[in-house]
Length: 233
Image: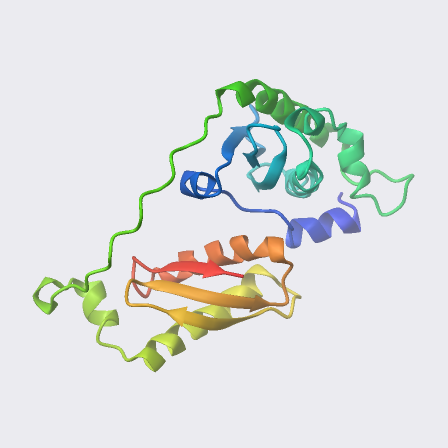
């Protein structure tokens, strides 16, 4: 059984997502990512390698239902701490954030063990994390010649801007309620570019949820064209 707070985090996590290496390089931070040995969760920490402060953090959970809210709460607590401090957080501190009242456990006690495993692996991995070289400037996009179009190009490229926006909006209107049930969230298209970049402004979500929403939408929008990428704020 999960507490109401834990169930809320299960349904609407605040910090779920991941960081690709290129984002760490762009932000000039080290990417520390480890998973526990039991396959419950993986954490992604962007670390200032000079101070070891965790500047940003996300998680992906794959295990028990309790692993999702626990990893979410742990990730939220880790932000702004040094790696050493985050790895000293007690499982009871994390679990306490999910309790409906101080006396009632939020999750079964046996579901907490993976947190200590994650912490031990994160602390051990820190010395191996390196600052990646900055990504090269993106090449100038060159629109394909019609004779080089594939099936996806033929379905997408001839559409007018308003037609493309309508198709993107249709996907957003379907996916966001599915992924964030009970939340009045909507997306405004602020940019739709020839190089398949879609820029969105989200309303109704916390800022830290925007990257996760962008990932959900990109996964769905590739059905329109496999090269579509999404950024959201």
